[in-house]
Structure formats: structure tokens, C-alpha cells
Amino acid sequence: MKVIKRVPIPICGVALALLTLGNLLQSYGEWLRQICGSLAVIFLILLLIKGVNYTDIIKQDLKNPIQASVISTLPMALMILSGYLKSVMVWRIALCIHIAWMLYFTINFMVKPKLQQIFASYFIVYVGIGAAAVTAPQFGQYKIGELIVWFGIISFIILLTIITARYIKIKEIPEPAKPLICIYAAPVSLCLVGYLQCAESKSESVVVGLFLVSVVFYIFALWKAICYLRLPFFPSYAAFTFPFAISAVAVKQTKGYFMNIGKPISGIGLLEKVEMFVAIILIAYVSVRFVMFLLKAERENC
Image 1 (cartoon, rainbow, N blue to C red):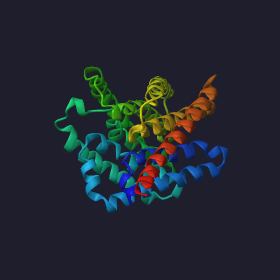
Image 2 (cartoon, rainbow, N blue to C red):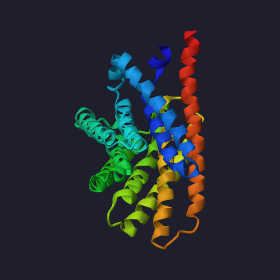
Image 3 (cartoon, helix red, strand yellow):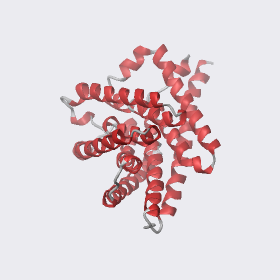
Image 4 (cartoon, rainbow, N blue to C red):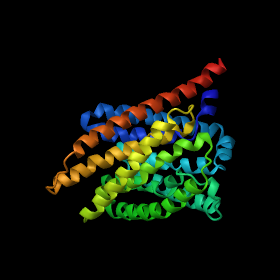
């Protein structure tokens, strides 16, 4: 049971990335999507088993604001998984869990926030609900999806000021928390994907604006990822996964949008392939590192 005890909460972030990558690769073969989805489900099941068998450890972990914010990737993963399962019930349950956790997090960590405890992972709690908009069209929930997208955009604007102020004013960051800054690449890309999926009347200006901002944050996050991949392995390596997967999805869908309105963008196809390649490499690498991390516990047990 040492393996289960060792399962870290951020593994659900890797599961979220795998599910997203599966959707991204679906056009290259359904089997690729199924492989990504299956591995993601295994990771989620491992965390669920830990939650059942080591409830006290999970409760203790969730007293930490970083862990408490990162666990929001669990309902996000369920939202994307609902698309695989074609289950509106899973989608609704995941949405309710995310809203409930958002309220809990706000009461416990945002009423009297301490600037030094704020990290980019806070984006996950509030903007992360945008994952519901990604699969909302599969269940005919366009209105709810669009409402969620605008909530995500407003939340991002507010949090961007607070989180960036933290990184500027308090430069000392614990080494295990350094990879979290790569999460900057996720919020705008997630909102862009949700907007393209759910908005009934899409504004070209909104799409262009979100796309340009997402590219800027992507470049920043990729630079940070290259720097921090030299660090020893920490569960926060999960931050190297979903932000890059959803960014690649955003580029792919933006390309499709402009092609559909008869205004194809030169070079965006190349950008799509580059971002997809980066996402595949990072997610594969981090997934292997998580597996090695868990197997290490098994070897120590022997």
C-alpha cells in the first residue's frame, strides 16, 4: 500500500492533461485518445483509492493552499472525462464539485489571504471551471458554458493582478513550488477554447485578443518550463502538462475558426504542430516521472 500512500494530489492534473491530449490527438486516431484516456483514468483511480484509505493524509494535505488549489484539477478532469463517457451526469456532478470547492477555497484561503501563500495554482480554482465549457456543447449546455467562460475571463483578470503582484513583491519561492508558474499558460487558452465552443455569436476581436494573450503567456510558461525541468522531481511537475495541452487545443480551434470564416491565418498551422509536439513531449515525460515516483515506493517496500 506504500504506492497508494505515495500518490500525490497533483497526479489529477496529469490526468487532466492526458484527457485533453487525447482529444487533441483524436483526429490522428481514436486509439490515441483511448490510450490517453485510459492512463488518465488509472491515475484518477489511484488518487481515489488513496482518498478512501488515507483520508487523514488527504485532509492534512488540503490544509495547504497549494494542494487545496491543485485538487481543483480533479473536477476539471471529470468534466473532460464526461466527454469520453458521453455522460451529462458526470459533467453535472463535476461542475457541482468544482463550484462547491471554489466556495470552500474562497472561505478558507481568500477571505484573509496571505500574499506569500498565493501562487499561480490559484488560477485553477476559479478559471479552471472553464473546463466545463469545453465539453458543454456535447450535452447542449451552450448557455451555461458561455456564462462559465465569461466568469473565467473576469476571474482571470482579477487574479492576474493579485498573483503577479505576489511574484513581483515576494521573489523567494520554495523550490517545489517553482513549476507552478507555468500554469500562467492555461487560463486564457482555456477561456478561448470554451468561448469558441460555446459562444453563440462569436466576436472576431474577442478571439484575436484571447489568442494573442494566450500566445504571450505560452511563451512565458515554456521558457519557465525549460528552466525548471532541471529541478529535481516534485509532484508540481504536473504544472508542465495541462497548460501546454490546452494551449495546443486553443491554437487548433483558433485555426479552425478563422478557416471557417474565410480568413485563414498564415503560419498558425505550424504553430499548432509545434505546440502539439511540445505538449506530447512534456506530458509523456511527466507521466513517466510520476510512474517512476510511485514505483520507487514499491521498490522501497520490497
